[in-house]
Length: 229
Length: 265
Figure 1 (cartoon, helix red, strand yellow):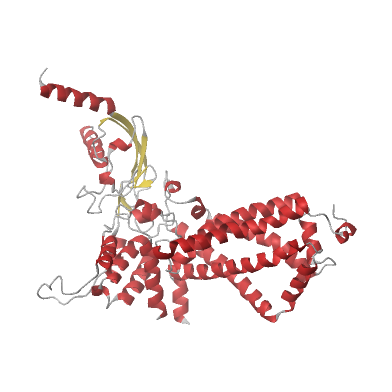
Figure 2: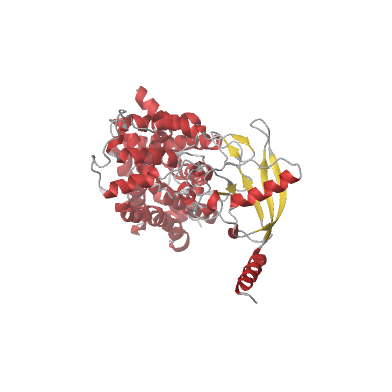
């Protein structure tokens, strides 16, 4: 136990926790996107509904859900501790500091991006997770998606958050491998390619949903009954 | 016209056409306890062929002539080897350019009329001693914690007794090129010393002589680095960009590997 505590107390230990939790969250994003793509089935949300029910009723998924929330908490908390320590390491700031000439934009806005993503998660969970799983609603998951994505401001916020997520992952994904000591020039190209899938393809896939539902999807009969559009 | 006169005239006209007048905003601080502030100086007739430190020498001569206190700055070899010099020039550690120490920056990097901001390295573990000089003994303490190999004293060993492959020795040498100037800390938004510690650990981990103390070295040096109050690496790689010896961040990946192996095994 003591060695675990001393490991986490070290600067590298906290970064390793951030890397492992970050990579786990990346894996979750893949699963989440695959599930979301069922919304395109054009069957009034039937397939998506079945998938949602299967997720909720599967005990393994419920355990993974707990690990997921723990990872999110561990990632954010470690980031905050690291960020505070980093600010303290330079008590007197430079009058002129040209970090922009030496570091990519994505690497300079990781904490800011993380904060936006956290805010997005609050909105996201409040909009979908809370009514579906906590407070209860008469709507199906599909109907809720259609209703929420009929609001242009909601869609705009989603798209903005997804651009931020892209930047966050552009730095974060490769950064995780560097922190875990797995970066090597021999397979840098493979890592770069995989990172591209995570920071570009994945957010673009998520972004396709609000775009599709706002511009192209006609409201379902049930959505009309519920007063949407 | 004599040939020598022709050359002298050409050189004179070339030089005079590029002579610069600059405004320098320099951090002045009497001692560790002084709050410090920027002072502005005008400097004229700066030759583009001067090194940055020579330009400061000229400024100091002017200040001494006026009876003012000269600007204190660290320097020694003035050829990019010793790691003594280190100034934040216009927001860049060691000034403009890549792979150079401050002493290797030439004034041709600037233009007539430029305002040049000169600051000391800024980091909690590098307190300012005076003006542009900072106390970098935190690096020494990290080295004392494990940046060495223990050897039995006696006759000098045969240099070729231990075979080391060329690519490994090259990689170890790339890391060993670190001059401990602290530019990595100065350039890092988190004042992290990871590139410095990585260079030292990588250098010794790659060579057989560093083998026996490998685990203890990684643990102790990282522990001391944290104790000194350096920030955490956030993989911005500004350190690599500003390192006068262009030491790769791949060594930081190796440091992380060494630390994890030592902690977990």
